Image 1 (cartoon, rainbow, N blue to C red):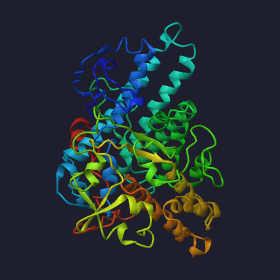
Image 2: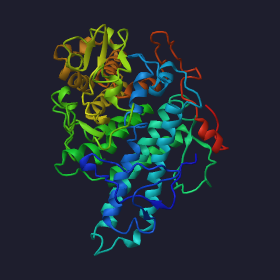
Image 3: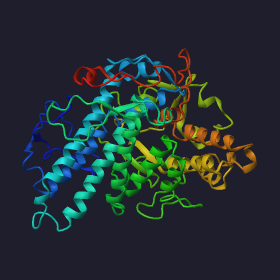
Length: 499
């Protein structure tokens, strides 16, 4: 693995203020050279220093090569809704073509490295905050720091670790449904790596990694704050209780544990409209999808999104707007495939607000313009929205009741009807439960276009990745179905096995 930090932790001058959307504590884990360093002996000496470390954890996860843009892009371009226009290996050509290898630096290696860097940073923090517990006393620390704030911070670290492991599973391991989690998963690194002594670590099974993800999320749910007051920025960019619950619905859906999806979703989605969380942040379906993606992208529908500033941009060729916007505003790396979701004018008609506002013609091509900021491209990188929780609950209810369930229908129509009022369904619209499930899956494809959900939905069902243009379909039996373990891991971890 060889992604460890040395005994100095940069925390002070790094302006990792979540409220300002600035997480500028980017350091090279192998040889960090921050402008100002504190010894690991003092970084837990004050509340302010600890807070800076927590903010920096988000910075690692929202790396442009990981969840600051690239992960979402790869999750969409693997399927058939986008066409590659540039054949640029730096911007995902191999991902789109399904020709990535163990030595593919810009995707296979970089995403793995940045994700494990984020995981290790969480592990370093968790070890440190426990090891320094004796310091958390008045007058330097508030009286409730040890019992409340420290646990909240640990909840944030464990949430981000869970998100990182979940994201890695969707690309580097077989779906849970294939063998009920028995296939090789990931090296499950849970200790702070400060040297190379633990490089050799075998892959845990897919099920074991998911179990750890759920353990982390359950801890997070119990210890994260209900909300950050009325601060819309913090409520959308920093983990709170509903964030952990929402991610659990995604995890359980990916594992096909549909009753558990219902249990979790019921905590924040009421049985009937209006669909608004009854406690914590009042997450809800916004009245307008356009508003959800309008700057500053801080509606109550956004459960978690990673922010950027001009001083803390995603990085060259990582930005969502750069990939999808047409020239001259964007790099026009990928256009929308006319034979993809655009071809379904019944489910996705011209009158649909998502098509009318987020699909733009440029000459004979069509482009996704959901991400509109370009000064530079500072759109938030969305992780999870309330609409996803609603559609996950709808699918889980349909599958568990094995019926055209009224609540499932209401949830589907709430999301669909917001953008396409004329397209809402009735129970008579579906001949059977599978038709309802198919409609929910199709709605997810439309609603989350360009947000990285498509690959998750294909993989969790062990379905074939559709072909596009000259690129053939990839069945689940193909060695191309999951990414290879990167060469950097293979040469430093003698216990790793290849995909």
